[in-house]
Image 1 (cartoon, one colour):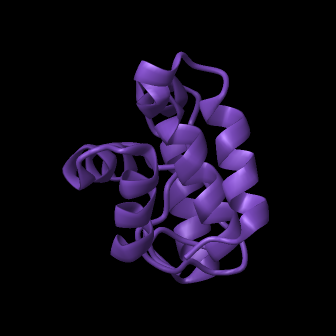
Image 2 (spheres, helix red, strand yellow):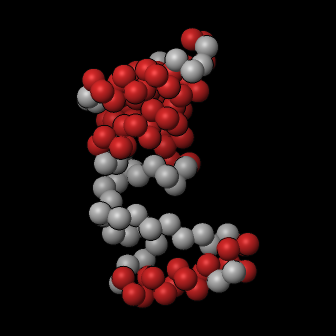
Length: 110
């Protein structure tokens, strides 16, 4: 499912933790998998879960909680715009609206 190079990289991340806590490398493993495949399909998430000896739902929870993981194919470039309160006070929402209009896409679109 993943290349030997990707698996070696995941193994290096797993080695940073005690053997009984190898699931602590889940975020790094997902990042490596996404870097190789472009996005995280359900099959890839399940593969990472199996590789780390975790229940698939636990890995799905991580993959869907953080917005840095793509659960569907994306465009050539991913633009992130901060719209939390401090950013909104500095016109982050205005920047987001400008880009939506300029690019002809909405939040989460390609």
